[in-house]
Every structure is written in structure tokens, then in C-alpha cells.
Amino acid sequence: MKKTLLVSLFGLFFLIETNAQFTANYELGVGARFQKTEQLYWENGVGIDYTSDFLLNKKIHLKMSYASSRLGSALGSNAIKQDNYVIGADWRFRSEKDFQILAGLNTGFFHFDTEEPMFDVLPNNSMLFSMETGLFYKFKFPMAASLSVGYNLINGDGVSKPGTLFPVFYQLSVFYCIAKK
Image (cartoon, rainbow, N blue to C red; front, side):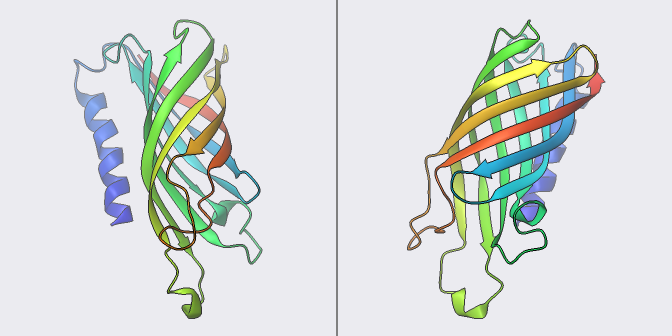
């Protein structure tokens, strides 16, 4: 199911890109995401950022990311392996400037794998819904960086939702602009 969701979301972005109405003037960036959950793990991964003139003159940015402790704190350790599949939208204040302020909403899917059968009774999946705010900067060369803080409105209690789904997280994203028209 997770792979189907991820492939569908990537397909959506590419369908938008192929429609001339949406791509009169657009930007597509891909890059690395470094996420730190407050008092827990580093979860690193990849992300996509898309905007066009059709999206309120580039004030709205659509984004998608995958972040995992497998590429962070669990790399080479016995930390719990957890994955975040996220889609979202940001509103960019000062969208015509290089330095922007963002506010956004995200949703997605969270999964953790304890790898031990005795922990199979614990909940290990949850929907994600979070708010995020931060800063975004477009460099003069085809790179951009984003620094943000977010709050998971659905967070874990260990009984009905995974206990490792903490509320506060911080992100640093670095994008390379692969398409700009």
C-alpha cells in the first residue's frame, strides 16, 4: 500500500507538469531532507517541491517527501526503524523574493518496524497530519534551502497510536532546481 501511495503521488506531480495550463511558468526542485524529532531520532530522506503560476502565482508550493530513521539514527544502530511518507502544501509569503516565509499543512503515513515479534501487539502505523512554519531561501544558482519547525496534530500514545510518533519536529531541506520554465 505504501509503495502504491508513493507511486501515485509522484505520478500526480508529473501529470501536473505535462499539462500546459499548469506549466506556463513553473519550478520543480528535488533534494535531501534532514528531520529531527524533538527528543528522539534523526530521520533523513528525499523531497520534491513544485510550484507554478497556476498555483496563485507561485504562492502555493506542493511538496512530497520520504524521511526515515533508516537513513538517520537507525543507520548502523539498533534504533527503531520508522518511515514518514508526507504530502503537503505551503503558502509562501514574499513569493517573488529570494527570502520567503512559509506556513503549511502536511498529511501522510507513519510506520515503524520493531523487528521483534514480541512487539507486534503494539500499534505501528498512523496517519500524519501536521502544521509547519519556517524560512525558505532561493540562491542565485539553482539551489534552495528550507528550515522549518512542525507540529504533528496526531501524535503517539503507545496504546492506540505508535509511541514513537512525537509531536514536534525540525527540518532542513536542500533542493536542486531540476526544472524551471
